[in-house]
Image: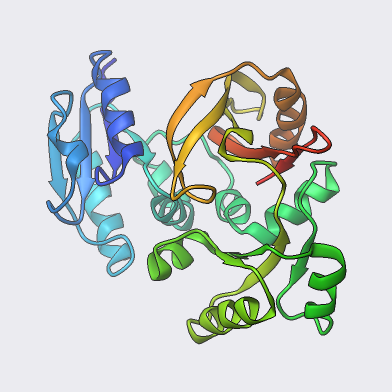
Length: 285
């Protein structure tokens, strides 16, 4: 393959995985980072180049110009891969400009950003029959009574903007065991101007977590897919996967395939589910 693979970010395990998977197949891989610090993916023997470019958040316009200038010197359009949500957001913001110089499966600006917003994604899930845990918006006037009667403690407070929340608090959510915990969590989020919502905890341990990973073609049809089951994550219960097994679950395909199609999604995508210990049903996580 003559098209280079340009990977945005090698300081996260996804970047390292992309580099290993493509590089081991003989594809020329390039890592683009804003610093050399902690870019462990760039140490892979399969990486051909590491480029230090402007920061995606501090200087997004400069990063755009940097990427365009790099691609202009290539005979064949490189393929651009994001390794984290923040890079997905950057690519979505400049999708039309980047597509002139890079191969990117997504064709419609705004879809990536839309599905990254937890509230928007939940609304779409409800519309297309995908189960989500019972949820209450943090601005609801009856928040505490709704939590007491419908959500129950313990519950979780989750962000609508996961990358911003994780960057600030270094965690995915807040666990609340009572009214005081909930009040403290909401105050922390408000102080940082972060929108959050309260959600029921689906019963089950880490090994009740599943993922549906797939590639959608230009017609948003699933062409390749795999289902996996988490065995461990860090932090326990609400963290990133650290030990996962491939496990065939046809039901997840039946749920996810039409959902991706309805979203008009293209390219690589993943949906995370949790299986309810009591009912056996799969909920969007």
